[in-house]
Length: 91
Image (cartoon, rainbow, N blue to C red; front, side, top):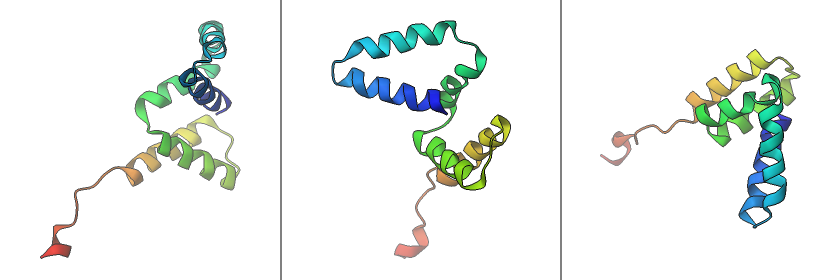
């Protein structure tokens, strides 16, 4: 989770034309082990809202295992996905 937050901060700094921290982060990420790169897959599969919802649930439920966190992201993904509007309300 810390790597996910770090990535977001680095992107934020990059948008403000402060590129050095993001470059350093990306270089370090290339040599770090799998536990430090798992968040890269999260950004491909889950929206920031799903990750945030799972982080909050983890904190509230004292969850510390990666598999349980991924399960929470999956649940949040389905809970937060867009649904077609209910047409019955307007008829």
